Length: 113
Length: 119
Image (cartoon, rainbow over all chains, first blue to last red; front, side, top):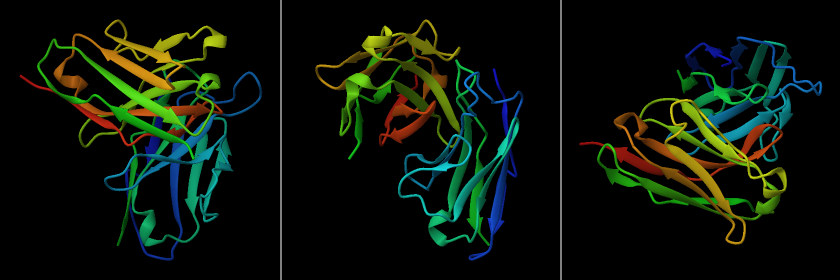
């Protein structure tokens, strides 16, 4: 199985400041069709997860443009350009390239300092 | 608007069985691959399994911890996804989410249903 490793696991941030979460996979996530199936999810306290980003950098409808995804191969990053209070929660990366199974990172908890 | 509504969770003893349902609306269910994902209390997300469309053979895949015990099925006439769980273990205690797939990812999630396995 592909292992997804996120860092940091806890991220205290100041409102209005940028934040960055790293996700590394144990093998390349480039699929045979040339696409890279790496997604990011946000889970606010007490809520279901919500997808923010798919295919490394494609933002879902309704996701604020302060969220961006980047990376290639085995190294990926989720960036929040200016953290707002509503961004508090746990963020997960997930690979959809090598299945079964699809695998998630451990999660990164974002909190306000 | 895409809606996924899970039901059927509850408290049961180890070795028991339970069937979860997920009522889907707001998209063409027949044409959509679907997955179940679970989250143990205070833990991260774990993919449980998936089913593709009837046109693709309604083929299923499962995570190793549930293979042979869980069965995913679908009733396209009812726009409903199912998760039959047998031989339940305490480690199956989790919130179970029904999810819609696209782009080899999970585009929409239900609100989840809690399954507690305890003696």
